[in-house]
Image (tube, rainbow, N blue to C red; front, side):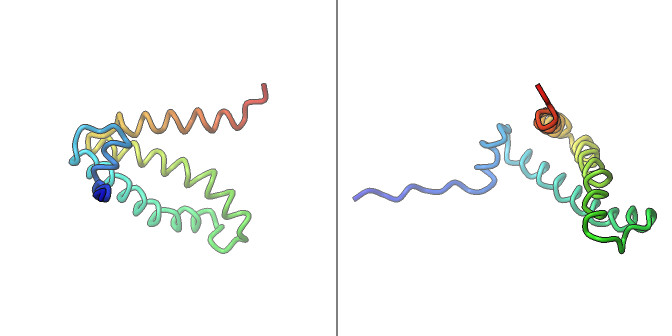
Length: 108
């Protein structure tokens, strides 16, 4: 009878997926994602209030989010990544994202 395959713990899977050197690095990266998300949740209503679009229809809010909040999120990832010593990890992810977005607009 075969033994069932043991499933790796979540942090170990993330370490391998992201090519990181330690579980501690995974934890730092997860902290960066959490802080970035919490900051955006706190800042978005302030930005929308300042621009007077808090009560706008869904289409305007969606476009505004993509134009204003999405780049802010990317910048905050780099900022918190720097603070927690993980800038290179996030910088590499940002470059991949930028290439993917540019391919969407490539007309060749």
